[in-house]
Length: 432
Image (cartoon, rainbow, N blue to C red; front, side):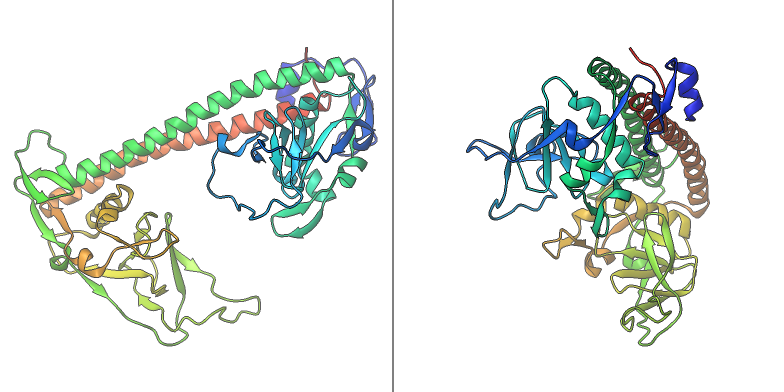
């Protein structure tokens, strides 16, 4: 949403002046600017026995790690240099501040030395919640990334010395408090609407999956007579449908190229696409001798990862990873599109997962050839398959349209939220 929309919604201050900082712009005439080091001090407290780990997340929440999640973190064997964090500290993640990892801690605990635990230098001069909003706004606008020292990809080294020299907007304390309270209220309301729309998207995707699964396993006629499918993953199928194991439906193709061949393809949830396999000099980046050929119209599935949902019909001639299974139906009584829908149901419904095997500590789950061959699928008459596929396309298109609308609205809400925060913390609008 445009900044002008914010301006027309809320009043402005009577007069403005140049802040002297390009990342702030003009500020209300009675506001001041100040360097971070004159407003905050960095604390280096000893840790207490009862302290738990505090984490600063990219959405600005600073809380005990267990309050959010415990997986996906690297735990130190020895807590060298850990420091005490106290409730109310303004916490800045020195390596991740550029991505918004700045906020006020809601708990007592401990953190790695990469965190900056800041408190006011002089009593009753700053509202830490206001400055959390202000600093996150700078981060998300790229200011902190431009000032910080990069030491590795997708990370920075933003130290207290950098923060100390940073010029900050400094309104009177009552206005800081009013702005923070205003943003707490407004952003919470926006976040609730976004959460509702995200939940609606989840439900729409589930609805789409149910439509596909019901269509390819039960057909479109609710009055049709059913029979026992005699397989575990489907209870009943229409009486006039056949059940066949995959070995009677398709053939696995194994054609190792053994040389530097045509385009290498990769398969993702968005389908099969040409993969860039060259280094910066235009040479092959690695040895693809074990890769296999695939032709346009053939199926490929990632049989080494049954949690991904990666299955598609290739639109290209090329070569593909040996982790993918390439196959083509030979049964004349089944269409490619209907078979693809069945495989997508198998992946996304976690049906294949039941017939897979774990192969590593990484959680990869493969679909062995014997299990694959003996997996049974329902096969309706071919004309009915075509009607089912068209029904799925029509209904899926409607759902995708609704999902797209919700996603656009979410994007607009996030833009509005960002603009509202920027306008409030820099005095472009007057609140309270």
